[in-house]
Image (cartoon, rainbow, N blue to C red; front, side, top):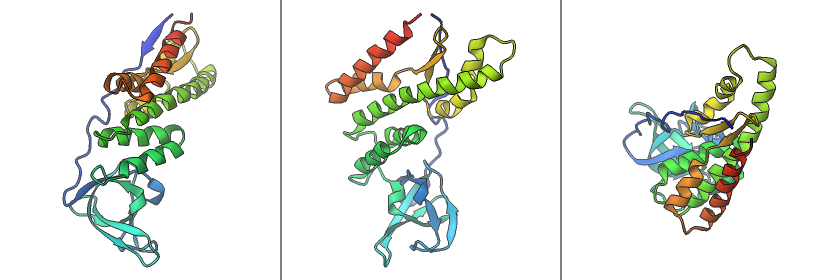
Length: 229
């Protein structure tokens, strides 16, 4: 058995500095993240904001049709109004549950990125064990698809270098690497597996949580699969 661990850079190694002037908030639903000049859905568009963007909330206002907007700074020079549901704030009670619900309703890589936002910013939430479990389980599910995609791609496009190096340089892994998600590669089965980091953190930090019991089962299964020759 030949296993290799993908080296990853630190999670969001150079974290953007949040803007000043208000309470920290993070964009989690880019579908609603239109920064507008006025607190109205038909207000002039200033710009679209990407998921993970850090904001400073200055005020809140409800429009005539009942939609709440935050007045936010996105830099020292740029501000505007954004729909409340597009963002979460670690200091706002209940926003950890709102983000968890969004994570649970997400799929694939969207779930990964939103789970990472939760773990990076909701350090004291009682919901962290649940999110860690979701992150680990989803990463292992996606490893199967990555394995199929890499095998199909590399079957058609491979040169003279050792086979495993093409798998470990597969471009489909890059976006996971940037979010601190690491995979191991089993050369015998030509399959990626999630390395289990979230499960191990869950067991270490929350050993008595219901999620920890499932994480241990998942780790045992992972180690069993990695022993396959």
